[in-house]
Image (spheres, rainbow, N blue to C red):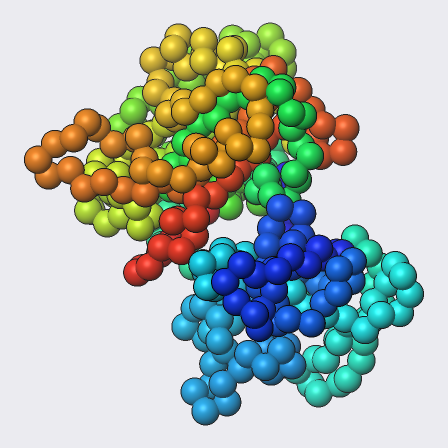
Length: 396
């Protein structure tokens, strides 16, 4: 499960190949550009990741606040959101904040509050500094057509679905183990569950089928399947997913007395013509691709291995995300497939506009687990996607 944090980490300092006044601070497989001499190799610091919202006082403390303009030097309308940038030809993901050394394993970080109170927090290596620093994860305002009406709240009938960037867990996969690499589509996650008869509820589709999104599902919210103004309802109806899910998983859910969930991505355009996200995939209307199937409730999930997943999708007549590679894992193979153009779009046509790839998802084909990290699944995000310009969107 992916969790937002600003961890206390040790940095590895690497010379910048194209500049003398800045250096590269390596944090796992992430890299952040820092001023030369700000850190020594092995120093502790706070890693502030992408999508973090940094409070004004901290931006001022880091000399990243413009008092004249009343905004910070980062992304977003207030200049306070951390976003990937490229400095002198090197990708920088996140900020590094230096702390005051307290011991070989701990540092002091500023903990000033808006009320003007001064203070410091003592934090050990590996601990999360986000609360002490008042840093929060950026949560974009979800459009009304993606929020929808709520039919009920049931954690057992929904999933909490998310996973980390592979750079955050560089040892998740063993060199040479068999993985599948699929394209990560820039759409919005839709989860459809089939609950056993013992969990039937008349607010669900035919009493058995639940619908939710990534953000809603995390909170246990089930969307109202009769709300035809909602994007997820429209997509599920267009692709006949309620009926397909009930037909395929209904008996199994009763036999196991556990819910089954199919998880996929809705992408392209809404029925009104707006983009689901800022990548619209040749303006395909309410496209859908499935990428996971799971049985069970939170903390007790049994994810389908790749072969079983593919067989299920074929039997259900449901399209899956594009497969880019199946074979032995290596970081080079992941990097090779991370960048490039999407393969979701149809073959070249007269009106075809090539579109970048968001990135890829890497998954162990046998569905195995890592002893520390859990399920072996991670994303790798394309540099072109991170640095794209214009009205970018990141709705859940």
